[in-house]
Image (cartoon, rainbow over the protein chains, first blue to last red):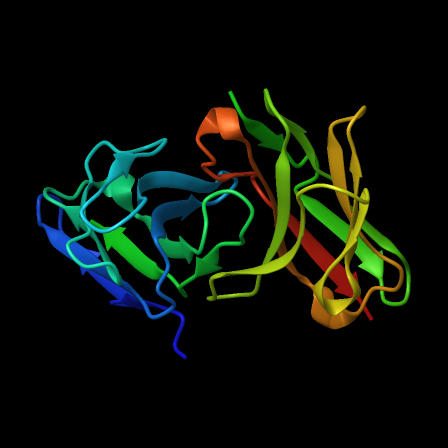
Length: 113
Length: 114
């Protein structure tokens, strides 16, 4: 049971380049989330999904897009990377949105130069 | 709007001493409260949660937390700290009014000295 798997683990982009971060979970969870972690700011919610084919904006959605074509996968896209998007990105999933804990991947460290 | 405050950037304790990591929250409805721990280069791991019922909840690795509604606090505690407890700790809250989105505090780094 792998849990939540994120790829890649590390990436360096130049300003203006694009990329997609992949999150996969094997727990049959309905709910999936993308967070970014910055020093002193905790985790901030970028986008989330309450089921296959659905997505919604979180606290800091600008500059990011997401897709949830399959229940087990949640993709985060950066169309034109900016230095302000240098961060550690975490994907999480949960069985329910109210009382159940979040299961996290190990993160993707992205640097935009 | 929901918010979580962890007033201490860092907490230092000696091994064997009790530890407390503080958390206060603000929500408009009944809160669902969580603590997570993060070790270097890893994702967050769940420690414990308060949903309803007994105000004192026990979790993984000997940690516990007390829900105090009047003080809107959910402090994390452990009777006897271990060097291996050194990590980054996050308090988090959800409520129905916030669409059950999980909001995290800024984190508190716990350093346990041998």
